Length: 392
Ligand SMILES: *Cc1c(COP(=O)(O)O)cnc(C)c1O
Figure 1 (tube, helix red, strand yellow):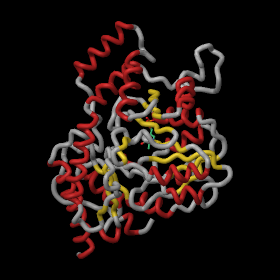
Figure 2 (spheres, helix red, strand yellow):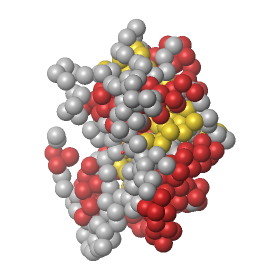
Figure 3 (cartoon, rainbow, N blue to C red):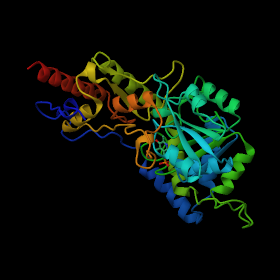
Figure 4 (cartoon, protein in one colour):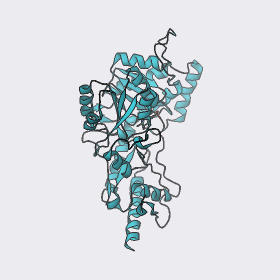
């Protein structure tokens, strides 16, 4: 760490948000409506794997335009099941610029995560980097729609087809994202969504595996129930990864207003961009034209030379004004204790550079119109104070 990084960044005057501005406020359904569902569930005595789960699976499949949706306890469990159901053994090529669960799901299946670099514009897995990282041990590819930005799905599908291996998407952020007119959920061998509180579609906790592959879907269904095909002759080593009825009821209510929330987040993201784009040293990860992101996160990229401070310093300075931020994703997964190993590790210059610069700003669907501009003003104040400090 050099002196510049240790330099504390302070902003004079009152905190911009004395009551605090959180990174995320989960969207929740109307309590009265959910109470009705809860009453129906309790009266039926069907608490899990019942009609609400079936209805969620039907509605999600209809929304995405896929043959099968399997509701599960979490995205992590869904990824574990999808990889298990695909019967992979060997290495899985994964991004490092993602949440650790992407790699964990591979590791829990005894697959060795092999980290590959990302595209410098979109920060999603780079198909050429996958090709370079692949060996004859490569059994599958897992790619993350980072922040809700659709991956280069065609490029990744081409590489996976050339390698002859399944392509699984960690679509944790992306229920509601679209590549052109096509909903994320229809790409690769399977796509796995998260419905946990920080995501845009919320079940309290939950996940959904989406696939057009009949066999894979059936194995995921059996797998979420311990591997029990129904006759207790357990077909393979499964999990308990079921979703409960109350979680499914919550998700159904959340799905009703999903598109409104995604639209709202796109408006907020544009407001952020408009308010931040003329600040030197601030730029944004790209969302391909014609694609729609959920903006599960709104991240900026902070260039230390241009801005005068790095992303970590800016995060600390914003915290002092009450604004919550997160370094998604720093450290990148190949540098965390579980994966960093002994050696120098893989060479992932684009990932390392993104990890150094990325900072997620507050983003939730019920943010008010003045909040992105107020956050941008606080960012501008930080920049002024470091420029003034440097000049004096
Ligand atoms: C949140 C998240 C997960 C894990 O989702 P859970 O439903 O909490 O298991 C996996 N991958 C990414 C990229 C995530 O952000």
